[in-house]
Picture 1 (spheres, rainbow, N blue to C red):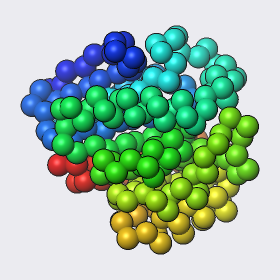
Picture 2 (cartoon, rainbow, N blue to C red):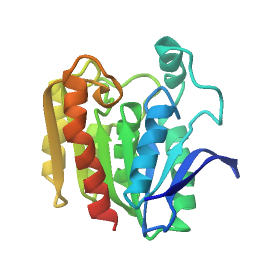
Picture 3 (cartoon, rainbow, N blue to C red):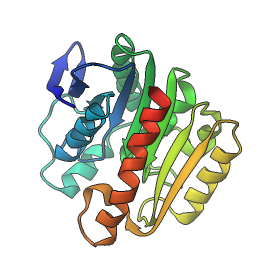
Picture 4 (cartoon, one colour):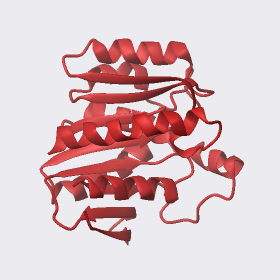
Length: 229
C-alpha cells in the first residue's frame, strides 16, 4: 500500500505523520523512546500506515535535534514530567480524532509507560500497546503518576511486549502490571521473550533481539489493526 508522510511543526504539534493513501477509520499515536522521533519510530509509523492506519509520532521536544548519544537522551528524558507528556499526547489525540473514529496508542520504552498512563484516563482510546514500558519502581523524581496502579483503570484492550532481560522494569514490576491488567474486564495480551533485552525492537544485538522482533512486531501491528478497523 502506498503511503504519504510529512514532518509536523504547526499549531503546537511537533512530530511525524504517516497516512495510507486511502485512509481507514483508525489512527495510532506513537510515543517514542528516549531517542525521540528517530528513524526507528518513523519506520514503525510507515509500517502502520501500510497496514491501513494513520500513524503519528509525537515529539516531546518541539522539533529540537535528536540527542547525540544515550547519555544526552537520558538526561533530556529525566526533565520530562508526566503532566507535560500527557498534555502533548492529548493534543495529538485531539488532532487525530478530527479525522479518525477509532484511536489507539503505541509506546516504546519511555513511551510505553506514557501510553499506559494516557489510556488509563482517556476513554477515546480503543487499543493500547506498550513495548518494554520503562516503569521505574520506585518512581523517579520527575514522575508523579503510578503506572502500575493506574493500569487498573484502562478500559480498552492492552498488548504488552516483555523482554526477559530488562534493566529498567523488574520481573516483579512486570508481574504486578500483568496481574493488574488481567484483573480488568478488557482483553490483555502479554508477549514474553526470555532472551530479548529492553529495547529489543530497535537493537540488533544480541541475536535474540531481532529474533524476538520478528515475532513481536507483526503481532503488535495486527493487534492495532484488529482493534481499530
